[in-house]
Length: 151
Image (tube, rainbow, N blue to C red; front, side, top):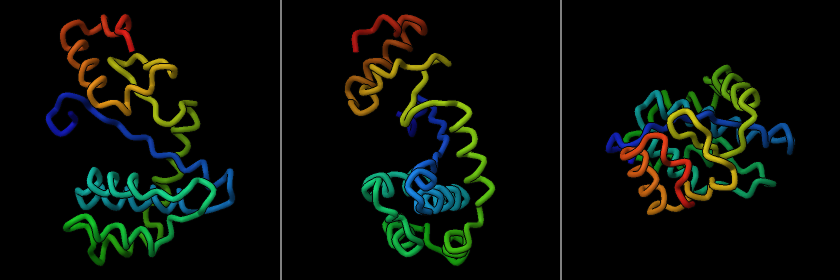
């Protein structure tokens, strides 16, 4: 839906697991995603990372693993991308994004429709493509009526 302009997605990338578990993998993944954005491959790389994420208790996003996964995204690997991953080039972005996540006090994922947060009890619609399409169609029909939609 985002690719067709039906919805707008705004990511606030969180790395709180590192502080909680004493690792660095989440920060490395956020940094690598920022590098992918620079290469205009964010969406593709995000899909690959999401599909291959390690268990939360494992600090699995190493530089080597992030670069290996980047091989699955045509045109992503380059000397600049590789250097950004290895040197944490976007460390300040990683810190700012985590700060924004903490200030928002939202869970992951969190979604809003027309600046109104989808109640946490209904956040499962984000994992149900058909239901999400129905909600988007309802929002188009009645921008405020979605709140009465049966999730």
